[in-house]
Length: 504
Image (cartoon, rainbow, N blue to C red; front, side, top):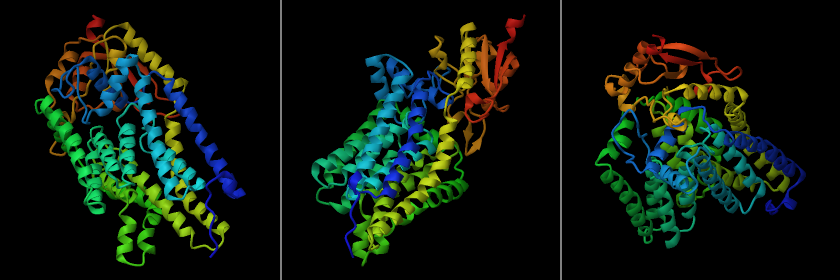
């Protein structure tokens, strides 16, 4: 069998491969337009952006983060490392909408760098496979919640987890310490990172038992010490908020089969999952098969799939939980595609086989990813809606319900929280039985001149909505987005309500 020349440089590629790379580059160009478009906007179209800004502002002001629910503040159920980093950036450059986005964008670039370098090294510096890995990861970033430069914990969490598992490629003392450090910070950014710390610890114990303490001890110190500090600093509220509140919402187990496995792992990533199993298929014995799958990339993929299976079915959770699984499947799958291609005697045939194998997931990801990306493009209609909302805030004290922090951006005290998970869930049932009345009192007393309600946030069973409707009257309506209605919260119909006292 002749040796297949690896595509380690542009000159090593045939015309078909070069054409594929050019096409892939052109497909990625719209992403740059999308990034510039969103970074130029000083507002967000969904609630989560403002929820995270509220956490950053809390740390920036020097107030305790994990505090009891109040009308002025509601902590959301994540660990705080991303917010802490952003608050430091605010201290250096001043508060604003842009810098937290840049933190996420920089973290995303780190995530892409380590993933692409991983493929580059595992495929003997194959340019085509490495480029395909970047394309697939870009598609994943669009498809799984648009975390690429969003004000959210996800991008930093993914970057830290990827860096940690990458360090495990070398089982040396320094690499194990660095892996423990990055993965522990990943857990302190998003609590699902604890699963990755545990998976990496098991990997270290199995592959390098004599050196495993160089991972285990730093991981226990950083992760355990960090969580213990948060628990003590909050007077015990940290556990109640981050763990107990997350146990309230219903787990929709049908999503495990229909969404997590059927649509994602066996659907979009099905061919990658198949080639991830190549070490088992090609092994000549159990020992060789075990060595083939006991790798950092396989452990990362398996841990990511476990996290998605456990966390994504929760009501309100998104497919962002599957990102690490997708990344691991991309690395393992492309490695398997290259290994399978070696069965061909002709280099050209091997190349075409590899390209065909990876074009299948590229197409599976491409269409839904760019559909999601198109939804996130902020156009003149979005800007006009936000300008009209801003005009209401300038008239007097105003609340945009479900959008905390936005009041602060217009110079008013923060408010408009809908409450925490315990306010809406009881024993897996959607109910407002536990919602405290102090969240409704300001509306009952008509402390605000105007209340803005998006149609997506109106639940007639919500006692706060009831208090608003009883004491405020509709003074105007903003129509839904003309071409993408009801895709994001500010693209639903929006109602401007005026306090009844103002009509007297």
